[in-house]
Length: 137
Image (cartoon, rainbow, N blue to C red; front, side):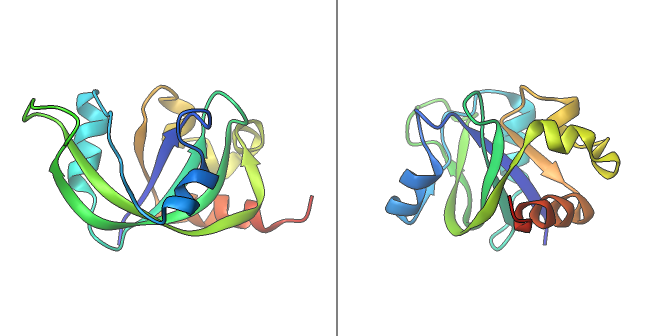
């Protein structure tokens, strides 16, 4: 299994809407590196859902439920989507500033390549962030 983080601006597509939808395709990726990350996703991979711009925090855990296929929002064959389904919210959102302070996350792609919308995580990074989200406020 591989681990990923996907970013969405909450006013465009929030965790709450994702939970209501129960499943969505992850579209709108127009960066080649992010697209290649979508192509590398496999069914069953774990995904952290990150609210960007507003909140700037990991708010939930999702799963890849369908591997890469043609993005239905464009005729351009270069772009793909994957289907994701929510698994559970994190009890406590994990804000970017806290991740930046965690020494074990110093190589986190979210910190090094903040503009990228789909990024890989190591298993350790995934577990650290999920653990941080289990803490009481």
